Image 1 (spheres, rainbow, N blue to C red):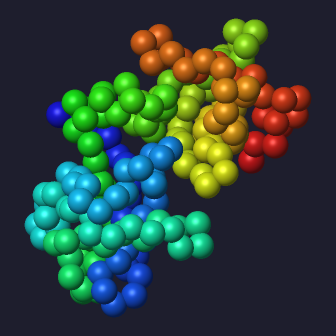
Image 2 (image 1 turned 30 degrees about the vertical axis):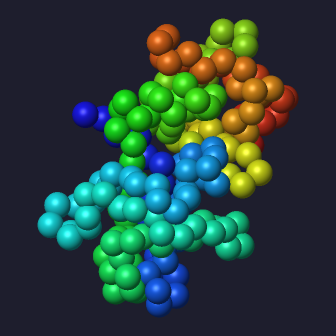
Length: 177
């Protein structure tokens, strides 16, 4: 069964078991609420519980901090580093029905075309930002371009056809490293 990543747990914050998370959802305020439970993906033998229940969530300097009922202190929080909070396929499908959006796992590997039909590369990643999300496109020449993931610049995402269509402003692709 394929899972959908909602967040990756980072370093501990403070001594009461809070952790930083890199959110991979476009509405973390609605997802990260006390009582919400999430399946976890962690290395085998790590001791991370298979399910974590949020006991507290807050935004601190543009970073989400979460605390879990199963993790009472900093020592437990250290063991969560790198763990992914995930939805199973059924929950992910329900979530996509409720909100218009895509998960990074859905987008990576899609062919990227311009609005005039020229293939420019393939999607290599997605970063969820506080102001807007960024779509990473590995261009056909190996460079990587960042495109703001907004409808005006990415008018089409067609998962069934395995493609995205981008309409970058003149010069945006030239900024690629």
